[in-house]
Image (tube, rainbow, N blue to C red; front, side, top):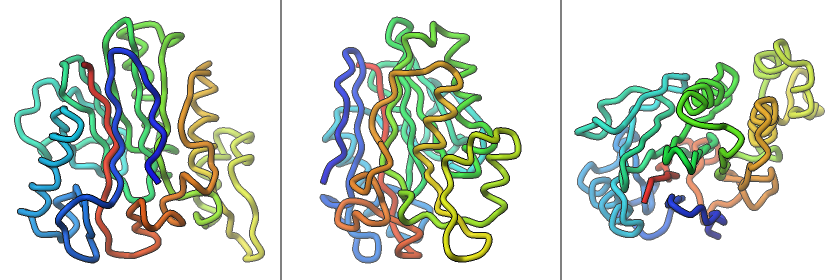
Length: 246
């Protein structure tokens, strides 16, 4: 299935699936990451297909599971910017996140004509990558009008974590415990990334949050035909989610 994308006037959102590309197994077929061992020529062709399909110029970063935010308006070559979040005011230049279980989060500040995207794995989410992005957007416009979309990620039925992950969220926020369900294995929990992201967004007063509702349909691990999953496959490609001003 393809993820449901909102229609936001003035912005174009996209989220790829794993089909429609040229990469061979285990990267089959629309792998968009050039740092996972795939043939570089195939990745380049896949990226061109993505750009042609969505009529945008995706700008890719070197993602490191951190909280660095950059502006991509002056980026001249993909992969030179080391960051896990980015923003832009230039039409057709897409803030783009590569994922294969982590949560892609897209933002649109309509009157200010600013878009942003964040790569929210558990480390980045716990470290504050969403808050860093929101602080920047708040300096550019009114967050009351901000729209947010959560993309596919590993779901709560498949994301088992240890006590250290739960502590990273619950020590600063006891209510974050709602994003974890204890399993039969001692010290292990099923974590809900999308729920944890929504909680952090709600703490900023954001109510216009669409997309991933933590159901199985949005789970990269279980939806094998649609999405890459590093946790499921070990070696895999990456799909992309992005947003651009139009």
